[in-house]
Image (cartoon, rainbow, N blue to C red; front, side):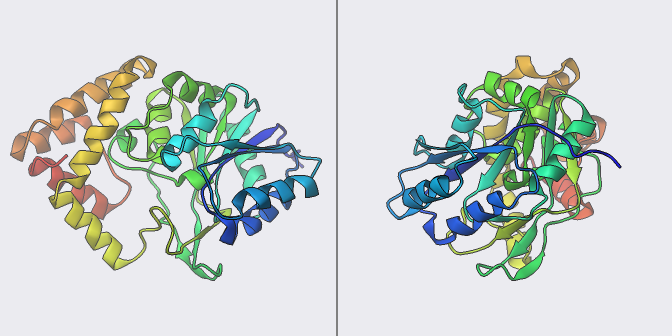
Length: 309
């Protein structure tokens, strides 16, 4: 029987006025079947009981180091990047956590096993179980089947940040890139940066996070037909092009961290975005960018043809 993967995990969590659901998430950390972890929380100026709940949890679990620090107060992306780039946070692995989810007991051990098997410089992400505010299951996030990589990351995010784990080598790449807060969101940014830098990206089809949906969620899931229609409408309004512009600006700033092949892919994508019509479609085919679903690829080709990449 294979021994469980070992290593100290720093759990990194951003909070802001999360008192309503925070206790359940903290309790799920305590229930992990991998017990070698510490918790680092960046709090973005909570005015509810968030800080008191964290302090009570720390007192109840003295065997774990729990550090509550002030966040940058510029949104969740800035908060997570500040934690990932903080030199005083040292660990073998780094797991990201949202304040309103609940982890299944194997969340850390599955990530550890996958990262350890993949080698060095690894980003792990997984599907989630989508629930309502009372944790009743509504569905699951999409099961993506195409291999992850930079040519996918340029045009699509893959796994939610609330499922992600990085090993120390991947975290060092993030630290070297710095706080690139202009990108659209931290999970897409980590996928782009690390796949572009040559890290191994592991996508786990088995979920280990209950992703709670409620009115205060910053982004939420995209399961509904209405959400899908809104994404299509956003493409034609130029939202997708704006997102790509933001991400490209940050990728160009850290271009030296990318592999030679992916620097070339980045430059070709940048040039492709200046085209439209058949020329754009031909360039997209040559570059072999892809999304994870047939519908996603149809929208990608349409965006290229219309000059909306």
